[in-house]
Every structure is written in structure tokens, then in C-alpha cells.
Image: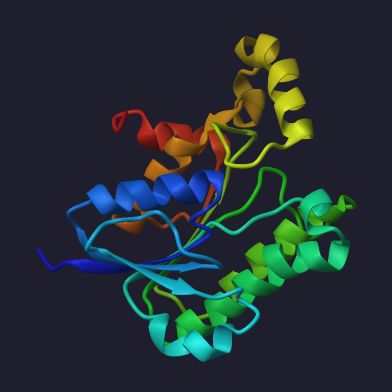
Amino acid sequence: MKKKTAVLFGATGLTGSHVLQQLIKDERYNRIKIFARSDLPVKNDKAKIIKTSLEDLHKYENEITGHEVFCCLGTTIKKAGTRDNFKKVDLEFPAKIAEIASRNEIPGFLMISSIGADIQSSNFYLKTKGEAEKAVQEFSFKKVVILRPSMLMGKRNEFRFAEEVGKVIIRPFIFLMRGRLRKYRPVDAERVATAMIKLANIDTDKNIFESHEIVNLTLTEQ
């Protein structure tokens, strides 16, 4: 079996960190190019860390080559400080990465978005996510996959107060989320990572996966 090269953005985030650990264990991949702002505590022969703030991504265009891009970038407006900074991380950087990857003929582009992403939304966050989805789909890839998880469960390296409060509030109501509400159930970030890598390695005519579909994809993987 031919070994593959993965290109990973957002490896320090909740989902991205799981994607990295799973790619390291995945025998289908023998190289992982990790784009990050600083060194990561990763000791594995597969891993190559490329330090960049993404502001100077054009300097590393020759490194953005391989079989799949795993784009796990994401922030919050509070952490970003301004709406413009938020758009830079969640829209402009993914679009630029997709542009370069497409130009370098990488076959697959997989991206973490958000439940409710909609370019027509009146909600700034969801509208920006929708714009990012639209932007990456405009480039010529053999496969584009967008995952729209609901509230992510798992331990982050950073503390997000609103997210932690939301987890506490929603837990008692999870069993009520059935039928059309299933996609709003919280989902483990590790499960999202598993689905992301699985989708990179199977044929699918579908390119947007809602949260409950992510769970269904991974039921036999856990």
C-alpha cells in the first residue's frame, strides 16, 4: 500500500490534536507536515513541524504538498479580540491554504466547520463559517469534505468559560435530543478526528457531514 503525506493545520486545538495523534498511529501515513506557530512536543519520525504564524504562508508554499490537507483551524471572537482577527483565522487562512493546496494539486481538503454554518446567517460566527465553507469549495480538489460538529467535548489546552458552562447546561438534556435534534448533541472531539481521517480514506459523494452523521461514521471505530 502506498504511504501518504498529510498536511495539518490547527494541531494545537482540541480536534486538531486528536487528528495529529491518530495520524501518527495510522499506518497509511508515513509523513505529517504540521504547520504551527511554535514547536510542539511531538517526537515521531513521521512528523515535520513547520513554524509559521500563517501570516507568511506564501513563504512555505512548497511545503504544502501531499495527499490531504486537514484544516482544523478555529478560534473564538473573544480570543481573537476583534471580528477582523476572527475572520482571519476562520475564513482567510483556510481559504489561502485551500488556494495553495489546490495549486499544488493536493487531491483532498478536509475542514472542521461548525453546526449551523450558513453564509446567509445573521449570526456573525455562523456566517463566517459559511463563508469559509464556500471559499474552500471553489477550488479544484478531487475531494472536499466539511465536518460540522456540534458542541465539542474533550479537554482543551485552553479554558473557554462559555463553552464549559454550555457543557454543564446541556448534559441533562442530551437524552431529549432525538430525531431532528440529534445533530445538536455534543460530540467528542476525538470522534470528530476519527471521522475526518476516515473520510479522507473512503469514497463519498457527500461533502458536508452534520454532527450526528459524524457520530454514525465512527460507531464501528470506537
